[in-house]
Structures are given as C-alpha cells and as structure tokens.
Length: 442
Ligand code: PHE
Ligand code: NA
Image (cartoon, rainbow, N blue to C red; front, side, top):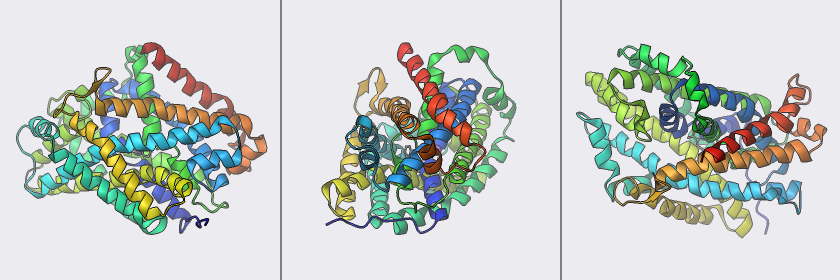
C-alpha cells in the first residue's frame, strides 16, 4: 500500500529545518580547518564566490526539483525525467548520505565528548594532548559516535514534523548569540590583528595553489548541504505553493554569517595562543579549550554551552543526511519509517567506525590521508560538486525556460534572467573548471 507522504507544518518550519541542515560542524569545525589549511584569505574569497555563483543557484535548483517532484532524491529524477540517466545524481546523493554521515557522526561524537568534559570541570593544560589522547583511543570515541548517532536516529524516527521541525526551531538563535559573544571576547585576546590579516588580506600567491580552489568550492557545497539531495528531500515536503527564493537567500546568508563569525572566534584566539592555523581537522577542538581556560571561572560554563550547541547544530545537520537515505528506502522497500531509520542508522554508524579508529587507534590511510580525512575530502570536494553539477545541468539544459523560472519561483522576479544564465552556464562552467583544476593537480 502507498504510504501518505509527510509535510512540513509551516513554511518557517521548512526554513528552520533547512537552516538546521546547513548550519553544523561544517561552519565551525570544517570551515576553520579548511581555511587554516588553505592559507586564509585566498580560501575565503574563493569560498564566498562559490557560495554566491554556485551555492545560490544549486540550492534553488535542488529546491525546484524537490518541490516539483514531491518525492525522494532518486525518485525525483525518475518522476520528472523517466528512463533517463539523470537519476544517477539521486543515487550518488544516497551514497553521499551514507559516506558523509559515517564520519560526521564521529566528529559529532567528539563534540558530545567535549560537552561532557565541560560538565566535569573543563579542559585545562595542554589541549592538544587532551584531544590527541581522546581521538586516538579505540573505544571511547566510538561510544560517543554511537551516542551521537542514537540521538540522530531517534529524531528521524519521530518523523518530519515532530522530530526534524521541532528540534530545529529553538536552538539556532541561542547558538548565534553565543557565537557572537565568543567572537567579541576572542577579538580582545590580542591576536585580532594577525587574524584579520590572515582572514582578509589577500595573499595573491595563494591563488596560484590549485588545491585552494577545490577545497573552497567543496566547502561551499558541504556547508550549504548541497549536491546530495538533502535540500531536495526537504523541499519535497513543501506545499507546492511555498516560496523558494527568499528561503534560499535566508539560509545561505545565515550559514555564511555563521562561518564568518566562527572564523572570528577561532583565528584571533589561535594567533593569541601561538597555535598553527594549519593544525588540520582537530583545529577547533584544540583552539577553543584555550579560550575557555583563559575566561577563568565562567570558562567551564561557556565551554559547556558552546559544545552543547555545536553538538545540537551537528545533530540537526545529521538528521538531514539520514533523512535522504531514509526517505529513499521507505519508498523503495515500502517499509515503515521506524524500521528503515533504525536499520539505515545502524549501518551508517558501523560505516563510521573505521573513520573513528583511523585517528590513531589503528593505522588506516588512503592516499596518504587518514580514513576520516579521506572520506571528508572525497565526499565534500568531489562527490558533492559532481552531484551539484549533474543537478544544474539537468535543470538548466533539460527544463524549458518557463519551467526553470516557474519551479524556481523566480518568474516575476528581477533576478529571473540572471538565474537562467547562471543555471545554464555560469554555475556548471565554474564547477567544471574547479573540478578539472583539482583533477589536474591530483
Ligand atoms: N551543511 C552541514 C554542515 O555544515 C553538513 C551537511 C552536508 C549536511 C551535506 C547535509 C548534507 O555541517
Ligand atoms: Na554549514
């Protein structure tokens, strides 16, 4: 029997859930280390350009496909373009959901572990020793990863309105306020000047480094949850009359702001404490404890609040990853949401264990990177841009102008012509260009 598809309770429910998907570890954990590795300002400029020229059209395109098709990421292509190859984008999306959530759950577990550390007195002394000791043990990080996945599974299990929508509604504002307060404090620590130079003073030489392009564009896709059908799936629970363009603008604006403010928390503190920006994926877990320690008495409380909110932001992103796979298998296997969520969630947890172990417990490397770092770079920098490329080509080149404008909700909007041009040429060419640079470099 055909099950009735769920829907958002309101347009704001959708916006908040999509915002919850976008704002996550990508803005704080991934953004700061990718920018640290990418040399700062050159990365930031290419990232911002990618968000504007690629992120915006790709988000609107995913929304258009999802709202039009009213079904999951795979079925959407089958429904709109039966018996064509475009469905590969949906299949890649479901695959990306498994792969991304597998390592995302590991970092989510780290955040939970740090939240707990601040309940029990905080992290004092050498923060990089504490971090290294924790992630390189075999059992403890896996247990925290399990806890993180269990919470994610529980929310998706409850469904679209009662789980996803409700949980996204109240935590975003609190996290924003806390982040701004922390940035203000971090800027007083004495590293502000160096941080500004690092973040905003263009270093022209860095633009000649091909790896900066691919990592900055990959970051734009990752942070906006694009290229794997998460935004498509969320938009499929929308009433066909819901507005899309303003939603996309709000989500992108906020996500970008979050990343920038996170940069203003992390880099001034990093320079103030004499740490190295190219510290890698552990950056926030090493830098932030220094700030909280420097805060003195209230430090443990602020540290607790910060990591709790980071964990919650991570969970609201993780549920969107899980939902892509769950929505697909509910329809494909015609099984209940509850059963599918438990099975798929458990498989993804198991898939993540090697990522967790690769941080020191067991030597697991691919192409010279740890398994976790490889999964992160492979999915973010390759799979997502490729998925996004296929989706823009699908809409830009197989839909009529009228369809593109109508389903993108941009028909009586002054930006219509620019959007058409971007969907057809600018975004696909830009993505392809960066992918080719990346491939040649590799
Ligand atoms: N956008 C999320 C973040 O920044 C991660 C994510 C990627 C979520 C892809 C869904 C899909 O943390
Ligand atoms: Na993000």
